[in-house]
Length: 107
Length: 324
Image (cartoon, rainbow over all chains, first blue to last red):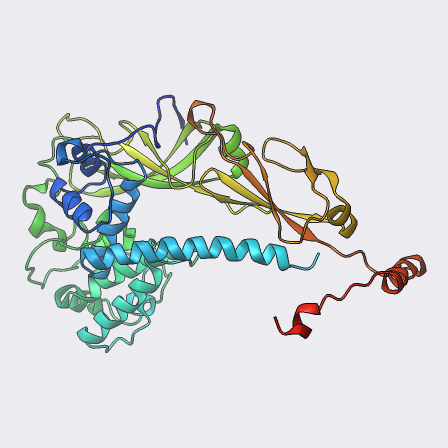
């Protein structure tokens, strides 16, 4: 198998924000769906008006995950938002639990 | 290609009702959905499940699949019968929620674009998205170590890319990309590789490839954003008297001062020793102290414990006795 060398990569981090059109395109959804997600509190862009909205790169993951949850599990947007919030909470607790377990483990 | 037993995958009997299949699918989908599940093979299981449900939920496809007969066993070498699909009437092409290109060759040969089942929705032999001017974006997840994130470095990523053939068939081709990941990448961040998605039909712009970064679990560190946490074992006298001890950090060991009178579970901070950030900023490393008792496994050690017992007025259960 040939290995192709990739020289140009772009990291979507804090310093690289996306507008609504770009975010929608990246996540393969309609811009209207992004607006719905903002209205549901699933995304919190910077900027007041829609054309000024700036999204963080990791919002793309939230959009895609929410979209997948809606399609695959037959939940609505509010349900997907709740699932994503609970998953974040669960993951934070799992990290905390892992720390505490390391602390308590016998050496 | 291997025969797939869709009933076995879903864990239902061959005679299960459509209602039962739907209920089982929903239950398993919640359990194995890759965005929800912590199961290690969730993604694979979920794809399998979607594929099985794609067939079993549709009475036409299910009836056709059932005609293959119960004599096939999962994993058996399989060729579709030559008269496959001849006597079926189709109400339409593939219209599932899942991405068909993720499904197995077994599925593709029976229900894919080139099959009798695939024809309806793809009249003219064109792909489903042939109207799209640009190629499709692809997504993949890469796992890197914390050290790689800290130092940056080249990674070879092996991907299986679905490729659309001119006749509408989808073939899965392995390919490898070598990508240099800069220092300070964080878990959950997206990397965009422009033009590495599907090539466009009819000369449009090819799609992009997005890589989502995940960290492999580290034996020493827990990571939260740019901050990392390490549990540091210390001797009782190091905690009590204070000490300067070497502490591992992703950038190499540093000396850390433990203040006298430190407690077990106390969190100390090594500023700027976390993952590097843009513009010279960096996260912190937190060090949680864990006091480890020396074993009383020699006469001398027992003697020292006896001495502490006799000379220290220490009651670890004072709080319990006063009821506070």
